[in-house]
Amino acid sequence: MTVPVALSETEPLDRKTLANLAYERLADLLVAGRLAPGDKVSLRTTAEILGTSMMPVREAVTRLVADAALEVTPNRAVRVPIMSATRFRDLTRVRMAVEGLAAAEAALHAAPDQIAAIARAESLFRDESARTAPDLSSAVALNRDFHFAVYAAAGSPILLDIIRALWLKAGPVINLDLRANPERLKSGGAVGFHKALLEAIRARDPATAKTALEGDVGGAADFILSRSSLPE
Amino acid sequence: MTVPVALSETEPLDRKTLANLAYERLADLLVAGRLAPGDKVSLRTTAEILGTSMMPVREAVTRLVADAALEVTPNRAVRVPIMSATRFRDLTRVRMAVEGLAAAEAALHAAPDQIAAIARAESLFRDESARTAPDLSSAVALNRDFHFAVYAAAGSPILLDIIRALWLKAGPVINLDLRANPERLKSGGAVGFHKALLEAIRARDPATAKTALEGDVGGAADFILSRSSLPE
DNA sequence: TCACGCTAACTGTGATCACAGATCACGGCA
DNA sequence: TGCCGTGATCTGTGATCACAGTTAGCGTGA
Image 1: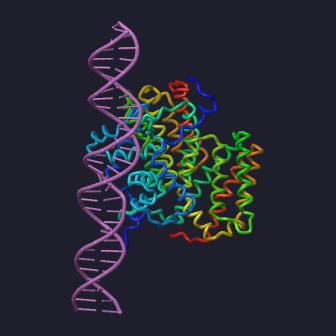
Image 2: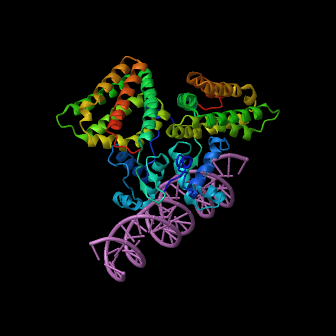
Image 3: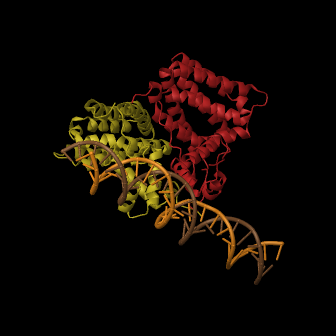
């Protein structure tokens, strides 16, 4: 049996088990900052909310715990980990290195349609940020879309998985902070860094792409650390 | 209550659940190359071997599947993924970048006792490799010990977790190949690269450390790709 | 001898139950 | 009024059962 090329190049999508669906739900909440550090996640309660038995939720939570996106405390309670300033700095360093690498690779390898997708995502995020009263949930989602459009263009599935795991850890801190300090959307340089990143990718300039991304990630981190609501 | 400093700086170890023990067992088998690509892993069978119910194994396998260290085929069978040459190249590129970064950080931040531990591990691996008939299982374990002594010295828990996940993917291919072609232990440059890496760390030279590690990882990968038992 | 078909044994997934331990709120005592 | 003890209710962990689907092997047919 022969299959169209476009189809054979497509990644096998996750088996649609209830556990995978539960995982995606929880992962979305985490990267969107809808779950805050310290929030408890009960297996039975979320199972009831999702309308399933405890089993799929249990599996989803197990995976998130393995990624350190959730943690189970010694007292048998699952919660979003409380990130110390030290750990946040570590996370930011790793993100700048790994996502910087992905941005550089994207500059080298992005196909025309991928560049178009990145440009589209950049435009949507810029428009939302420019509104007088930006919708925070939309802005968070559009920021994520832009970043992952770039990372997808790097053409490395393994790197992409690593970055996804990093965002699960960073989401609660970064996007919760954004909801608390929405002025970062305007005063922060996100829009500028995105524009620079897009242009670097268009120019096939990996070094500048990496620098732009590091500015974006590092800038937000500095902002949060200066407000320093983080313990330790 | 006050606790000794040395104690408070220690990482909280994994809760000793049966699921965690099962995970460690399976992870060890994978990084040691004792499980080959394509090998099937039955939940019930391994549960019986470990003397538990299916439940802990199920949880361990779930985590390994999430890391792509195992996969469940569309026909409901869990197996070690079969790595294509393309994917192996991707994995190697990412490993060189990430583990290279860790090596550089280790050169910058390694404490004296950490350097001593690295030197000890280097020596043990060198001795084993020099034997007329090296024990492959020992050599594989000692190589792992050396590498992770370096990565631990980088002082980044997050980077360490990422690298652990990479080794779960690489182990079956690399260490299975080593068992098939044990001459790589002697002809390959591992011992030399390790020595260079150790010296670079001692000299606080991150660039050289990164280069040495890239040589080690890249050299083994080139050897395997040239033998090219990998599909695609 | 080869091919077909059937059954029996296996697969992961989901649900349910059991259990030990921790938490929390309520009530009684000082 | 303030504090301590206690039981009801919650927590995750492990075991067991049910189910639908796949695989593999054996026997029967041509």
